[in-house]
Amino acid sequence: MTENILYVQDIVDNLEDDESGEIKDLLEELADSGSRDFKHEGTWYPDVLVRADYFTDFIRELAEDTIGVREEWPFTCIDWVRAADEASYDYSQVEFNGYTYYYR
Image 1: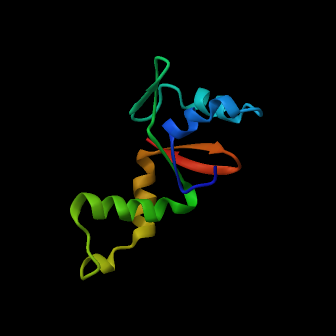
Image 2: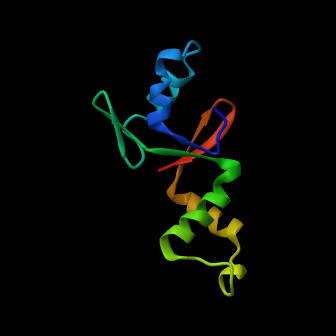
C-alpha cells in the first residue's frame, strides 16, 4: 500500500491479512481522531490518508473541486507549495509503511 491516497475502509478490508500488525497499529493510532468520517466496530476514523509527497497536488485538486480553480490567470499564479504548507496546519500526520500521511 504505497498509493498517494489511502482510504481507511480499504485498510480495514485488509486487516485479516495483517501478519506484521502494521494495520492494527495504524488503526490504533487513528482511532477517534481526525474528521471521524468512517466507523469500524464502534470506533471512528478519518476517511482518507494523503501521502506527504502528494499533499501539494491533493490541495490543488481539492481547490479545483471546491472553488473551480482553472488553468488560467490568476489561478496559474498560485503558489501551491505555500498553499499546501498553510493547509497542513489543519492536518495531523501518521507514519505507515515507511511513508508519512496527512489526515484530518
